Each structure stands twice: as C-alpha cells, then as structure tokens.
Image 1 (cartoon, rainbow, N blue to C red):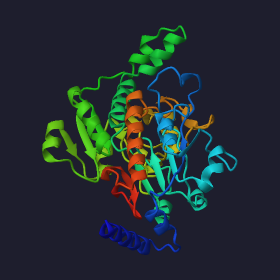
Image 2: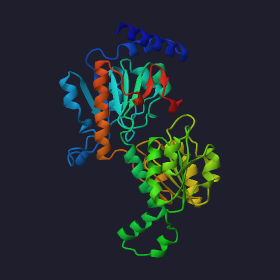
Image 3: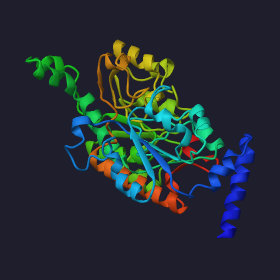
Image 4: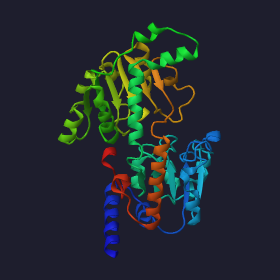
Length: 386
C-alpha cells in the first residue's frame, strides 16, 4: 500500500512538473481525494410536472440520479440545482466549498478555468453521460482534478437516435407531419425530395463506440458505408460491418450523401465544419450531428440550409445549451432539430445513474475507476481530447 502511494505521488509530481503550472493545488487535490464527508453538487435539467410520471426518470433535478438517500445516509451533503449560469446562479454559491460536481451533457454546467480557480475544495468532476467538453480540461488537469464520465452508458441511445434522424431527413418526414397537424394534404410537396436510404453513401466522421454502433445498424439498409477516425477498426469488424476506412476526411466528405458527426468536441474539432468545408460537400447533402453543436460553424450551417447546399440538418446538440430563443438553427429551413435528448432515454438514465453511483462509491473508498471512464487523471488528458 505504501509503495502504491509512493508511485501515485511520483506520477502526480511528474505530471505536475511537466504541465508548467506552479502552486500546490495539484498534489493536494490528488492525494486527499478520499478523506472525510463531502459536499456534492449535481446540476441537472428540471422536469417539473414530468418528474413524477415515471419512477425511472432519474436524470432530472427532482430525482437527482436516485442517489440522494444513499449519499446522505453516509454523511455527505447533496445539493441539486438546474440554475447554472451567471454570477448569481445557485451553482456559483456552492463553487467555493464543493468537493464533487456532477453534471450532464444535456444541461451542462460549464466548468471554466475561473470556476476551477474559485473551487478550492473541488476534487472530482463527474459527467452523468458521455462527453466532458463542458469542462476546461486543461485547467482541470493543471489543478489536479479528476474528470470522469460514464463511458458507454448511452451509446446505444445515441446511435439509435442518429439512425432515426437519417430516416427522417431522407424520407422528408417532417413536412408531411406538419401538413397533417395544419389540416393540409399535399403529397407532391413531400415526395419531390423523399428518397430511399438503400444505395446511399453514408459517412461517419468518428467511429468510436457510437459510430460503430451506427454503422452496424445501417448495414441492413444496404448503404455504401464509409468512416473516418483516428484509429482504423479491427479488420474482422470492418469486414463484418462492410464499412470502408477513409484516412483523409476531406477526401471522404464529398463522396457522402449523408454525413454523421460522431467525434468529441476538442480544440481541433471546434468549428471544423466551416463555410469552406461545407462548400466542398455534395449539393443536397444531409447532415446528422448528435456530437456537439460547436463542431459546426453556426452561421455556415444556416447559410447552407438556406441555399439548399445542405438539404437537411438534424441533431440535438447546440452551443450554448440550453439554446437561446433566438438561436438561428431554430429558424433555418430544412432542419429537424430537437433539444439535447438522444442520450437521455430512460434506459440511458438508469445506466449513467448507476455509473455515477459506482464511481462515487469508489471515490469515497479511494479506489480506482474503470480505466475507460477517465477523461483527466493525474494531470493527463484522455487521448481523444489531446
């Protein structure tokens, strides 16, 4: 045990020294992660009258991941709010003395370098779901914080949602729906741009857990499947799915009738789909983005949807979130946007709530998390965020 602690301390010191930051916060936060009762703050979306409609609706603020009784029975303090923005918000009041912050991609608490600096007791940042880009990860690493998420908890949920959105766009579904609720009936207004999915070229930018699941679900539709990723799939899996690896993303994109975004938001991918890149896509391309809104240049998407260069854009991710009422994606033509819902099905909520509880339990006991859950550990960022 003593040897393990020495090794951990040495590793922490190496990461700290290489980061170029000064001060003692890194070592302090790292080595005292499991001592004493904790103040835990959760930031989740408010459900209001819907909170009591399903006993498994645990992802909302009212039901707080279903862990309140468990935490309080162990002597921990659990504060939950949906109020996360501005200097006078409820979250800001608890920043100085919280030990753990839990939030979700669906209603993210933006953890800036400024907030990290104020949070003198903060040790652990947990994402109930997948995607921790709401955290300033470099600042978290420099401060010696641990950042973790429930990897795999909602991959099926998001992949299924992506497939649904592809079909909604390809079949020009939404105009038909709107006709019916308006009392209209005009088949031609829908049929002139409705297609079969079979035979279309679908490319995913990113083929991690979600991207692979999507490709597997697309196989029965007899599409031409392409993928771009940092890593090539195992040859057997690639053959089984029938997908072709494209090393150059800019060579792949113009081939695609449908593009699906499945990569994390990083410094490299922020604004990746700008005016210039979109101009190189096929005229009439369909785009599905359940990854992160900031991967797209907001105005470039609006302009391309308005001109018809993008024939349909669908997704559930925006920047910022919640999207303001005047966000231009709400009003652009040819879209099928929703709030951020793909990864917060009831099934996904139960999985990420269980994952958060497991990591908290390990944290209290001073135990390691499953390796795939770490986004920042001992001053190092996970590979997908480097």
